[in-house]
Amino acid sequence: MSAVRVSYSGDKTCLARDAKSGKQIVSDCSMTKGKEFGPESLVAAGLGSCMLITMSSYAERHGLDVTGAQTDVAASLGGKPGMRITKFDITVRVPRSFTDDEMGRLTTAANTCPIKNSFGSETEISTHFEFGDKCFAAA
Image (tube, rainbow, N blue to C red; front, side, top):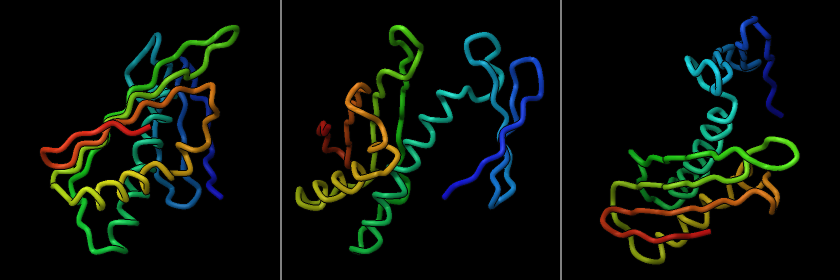
């Protein structure tokens, strides 16, 4: 289980401390302040990180190198009646090419990320993968 303590500092700003590492992140209201990470950006960062970590775990077990891989994650807010994240647009970039079979397996691994699979069907998630000079979309 992951544990984070979040403290409100005033002026729409929070301080989050990871219980295990002690590392801290400051967040604020991205709609009105935007000086720190906003809550939706932290969710997007968690999603992108989880996909890369899950993919890299598979890659390491199978002798594949995905060092330098990156994700770009855009989170869109909306929803009625309450505001929520309604959509993620994700691009996963791996700086080297692999066989079609390896790319398929790496894509499958990234898509098994537990954070990605925590969102219900009401949240649209569009995922695009780029391996070296090869690009393809995958849901």
